[in-house]
Length: 531
Image (cartoon, rainbow, N blue to C red; front, side, top):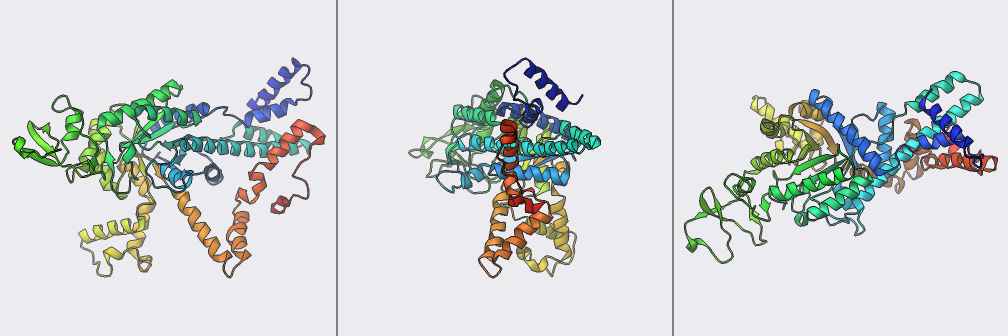
């Protein structure tokens, strides 16, 4: 007996023992139960954490089994991504969602649009996680509701084969609920603040939390200047805080992504505590830029002096009170950050880079894997990179090294459309197309994400519609550019009433009121125009 039929039988027996529940239909109860597989956010966190752990193991065995996600700033956006994934690819396997702190700051703060500096309300992070999973669970209920209506029609027409097929589809239904990698920025405060926020995020459904090694109150976007990092002890305390939150809530497979911004961060707010030569604090301080001094006469009022390499070092201090790192020390600091994080509780790494260059990433990962052989990365395929220009320049440089004639190209202007049909541009596009697979194989990248895709797609599609609608095209701009494409490409949202839950509401009205139900899906519903 299928699981669906078993649930019907269970409720049938239950109702026999509840004599006043005669109006309840056991099959309807079974349907509502299956449409709500996940009862709490912790159910989701445990379920999705297990998925991530399994995917990480499969990647260790085969680097072609990497995973992907797209960033989202609203539950509807996340829902539509998963509906599209199931529609086009048949399965949600190895496809996640990414929750970007940048997009929360820019789009979800009550202060209005904000830069990525952790100024937005921290409660908006778990709120968006909960919202995303609410929409994904609704996608489950909507799709299953459609299958149930088909099942009723098959039974009514006496098509037992079709009914059996539909029961099998119901039993083997694949949920839209997938892992979310959620951005906690630099923790929004000290380690206790990080722990409290992590708990809220996990309770909302987060199975993977990404945390960065910047100073919480000086936090900057990873692709902007002015980034300030913290000593390893401070960062590890926050990793511990997140792990305790996972364990306290019973999500033992919870995943911590440790992000380092050291490649582009030239500043630190504090000098690390060190107890003996060669400890982590001493290693952190060894990267400080400064001058060795001989005596107190070399010290000015307000100067700070530390002992490093057996000598007295006066670190360079800015008017802001921040200290500088040595120029060119970024990669060495990244490698130390990553090894330290993996050896002290983190599961995955995130190295924020200034360009998408496989050789650069692979060089750092090779060094990291000398200490931690199975080190794996989450990588930001960022819209902050000019992908076209970067890859055309990479091809240009490679061809130049090979001695090819490049007299027809201006390296600084390779973004120009005049180069679009050239062999150089085509090779660059081929490298962009294979970037994720190549980087997974060569640079240890387990998970590829785009942080802000729908921020840009929303702007682009809105621009196209506004240009035509408020111009000469008028209503045709919407009909031709939006609705006609929705119909012909099978976009579920063309039936927006259905997507918003009107058919599910009708189902429930029938369950609750029987023949007295006043339904919205009658012959006068204009949604019927879409078939």
